Amino acid sequence: MDDVFKALADSSRRQLLDRLHARNGQSLGELGDGLGMTRQAVTKHLSVLVEAGVVTTVRDGRRRLHYLNPVPINEIAQRWIGKYDRGRLIALDDLKRALEEPVSAPQFVYVTYIRTTDRKLWQALTDPAFTQRYWGATFESDWRPGSPMVWHEQGWTSSDPEQVVLESEPYTRLSYAWHTFDPAFADAFGMDPDTVEAWGREVRSKVTFELEVQGEVVKLTVVHDGFQPGSGVLEGISSGWPGILAGLKTLLETGETLPQPVG
Image (cartoon, rainbow, N blue to C red; front, top):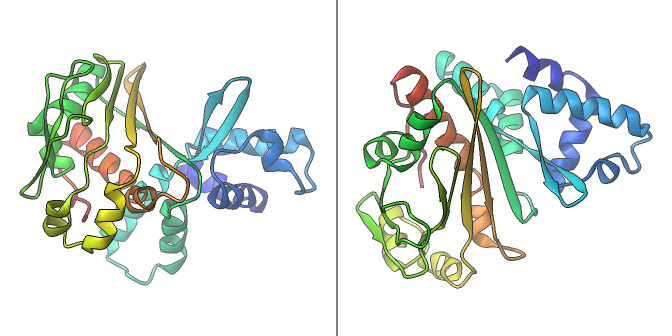
């Protein structure tokens, strides 16, 4: 966590984070435009942010796009806010919330490093006995491309012909279509029926997990994309992923579970 605090200590780097918060998925040139910093300086600051895990990059053709990664901030909050139970830690809480709030980008990218094996992580992503513990949801599927995927959570069940596994390369890559939104979902989660009905009319998004072994840890990259402009679903799910990933990491590294995300 020292790298995270070091990365956040510089005002120029915080300014770059503010820019990504306003519009995620920017190139080096876009981030530096109008800041009064040289391209070399912007590159140096971004390298520090990437090294700390606060920013991650994705190749898009010849461009490299930069995304906020709120997972390290979430882990800081889990460690200290939970430990001391200080509800008035305003600065840290505001920073955590700012990095987890929905943004207008069509894609979310999260990265975390878990001290485990690729086989155990794959099992944690697909085995109901694991997903129930850190996610509160279970999935029925044989995890083959094109196979259906039935979603169970809080007494609610979702099954749909388009709710399927999209890609499956064991221990390396997994992608599936996001669940369907229906009236039963609104009832199960205490949500406004009109809001859920609007979500149900949107194009279906997808989530992709990429696993990369790096010595004694596995780098897990989660990309959630496929949202239409102005997506309400995007706004609804954007704050949930950091908590899910923190719970996954804690479970695999300690065997313990964190309080599950609400909603």
